Amino acid sequence: MMNIIRLDEVDSTNSYIKRNIARLPDLVTVTARLQTAGRGRLGHSWEADAGMLPLSVLIKDPVSPETFTLRAGAAVCGALEELCGDIGGIGIKWPNDIVVGSRKVCGILCESVCSGDSIAVICGIGVNLTQDEDFFLSAGIPHGASLKMLTGRAPERDALCEAIAERVCALAKGGFEAVYDSYKRRCVTLGRQVRIIGGNGERTALALDIAPNGFLICKDDGGLFEVNSGEVSVRGIMDYV
Image (cartoon, one colour):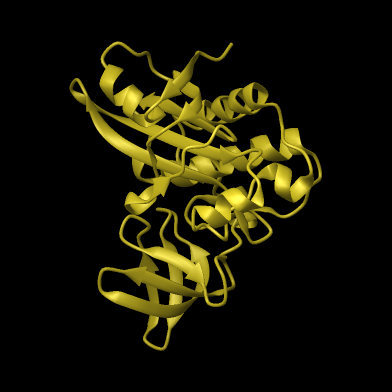
């Protein structure tokens, strides 16, 4: 049975684990009905809404923590495919945004923290379940969508939380190679012209492959190069994907 702490409201499930990490066991999951101050990758904020499922998993002494965010993406896809049935188009926009078609339905933020004499990873996940179109437009997130918007239905939140947590925990002690092939199969970024946006400006390239360390292998007029997800944002030429 999964070890899940369920809260009514919290600023952030990641922050809750940080505050209580000394007393929390390995592979515990924290979820809440409402998260009021969530954050995404590269400092982006998550809008507070009861239509989202927020959860965080604490992984102590993980294997290959630098690739855990990609492994979490594969875990979320597996859970959605199990509970949502044949809705089609579930994929991963590198490194870890879960999309249905060209719309983002889930974001993932993994943070490394010190836990005693070792390192732990807090894997934060937010799945858009039931928000409507107006929510995403008013939040300035036109590429966002909820599962209910796109499919007409949403999985039961506790069942989805448990399915995601189970898969994340199963991948906690293994490396990226455990999901490498399935991740590549789901990665909608590969084969596309993309914009690589970072502190040094913007660069256009063709996304070719995923390296064993999780970096995105790209090619432009200067040749092949690798992109680190911790430093840049990657988007399609014409739209989000």
